[in-house]
Length: 623
Image (tube, rainbow, N blue to C red; front, side, top):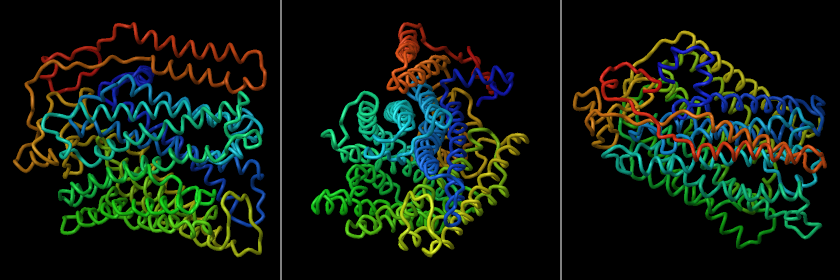
């Protein structure tokens, strides 16, 4: 958000964000929408925990519980964690590599709007006959026979959102390869940029299998194909393979950016270069590589046979090695450092034991014979929440606190931040630690109630109390954001005082062109190198000259909206409604018409002249 945007009226600012192709504003759009979906997913989690607080509860019906359970998982993975990761990537990566924007600004905007309309489409299912109810994995044996349109909303909504994610992955790959500042070699890139680079490659290869699976599911449900229907000669296990070939790399797509955020935080608040930088880079790449070799550990009970089970068990255990390297390196970074316990650092320190616990139970589940016992019990629920919440969500909360000053030019209140940290962390461990024991005592996943005499009462009540503590922590964070935004007390370019990388060398929030002159990178932790020589700014790699910037455009909104409209036509096509075909045609006309306008429109961007840059104030707008 540039200072230019702050000077405009509310309506003009809304239009500014609807049409923006600036990566920093797109980061804010991802942050707001991802935060909204996070709250929705959190409310669904609260309904689950209220229902399971006491035995034989009738707070919600069995069918409605299935819908809540499905939407909680789908929302949190696809509509909350992913966009919040993209929010931090958009806000930070171009700044860290010394670029003025991403490689394809228009595509960046289109990716966001596709995600947004896909998420809205999926959540409209609540008001249009019922949400999907076949679990967030939507296994074909359940989803093919699910009544109503809930699963159709899932299939179409995730396809639209998935296109946006794929575009974002390609965009960041090209940006990092092509747009690094002079001197920014691969082995000088910050760890967060490295994690984004690896994640973008994972997205490129992991999302197509999911897209293929969703298309086949769409043909099965809407057009009478039989890819997954066993009774008609199909194979329901193929869906599981397609889903988990995407689904396990997806875990690393989410956790690697969190690893990158923690790497930046540990180095900054230990006032030390990250220990073992090279090994951290290779560990990140290795995790990405091995992430594609472990998907069938979700399928040990499907009858793949002992050889396949053994191969995937070994691969799953092997992925613990690069993760262990990272954990030791983070500890060694703090060792002997001048550690400062800010709110981001508290999250980083708490993450190490929390994520390690999740990793240990992952090794237990990687043993195929043991998995036969744990499978579909609450032990698995506890494990993946320790990884996703104890890893990804703690990473996102740390990253939002850490990079908030850079994104908005204000700093979140430390005391309120500590209240959020302690209530969320204690609540998290109360909620999920006890679930390991509930699972070992025989409580199955996805059940909507349990009986009074099973010995599960105390554990479930503790879990529910913990969930309310987590919710309180999130509420305090929302209050913190509101108070900080209202006060609007501005901070400088390096508010933590120990910034090491390029993003801390420019004003907060950055001007819309990021860097007046591309910086010259002379080593790892480029800004720290300059500070150690007594300089307050980066050494420029070029003389001051005109800057070329892309034009804003409303077309990404219309392209995404067209698919949103067409999806409704496809959804109700199976009901033999007469109006569905015109709706499909209208939606596709909007999309392809917008794409045609984009292809023939003279859009060469605009120049900011050197004379305007000589004035330090950010003028913004069109030159």
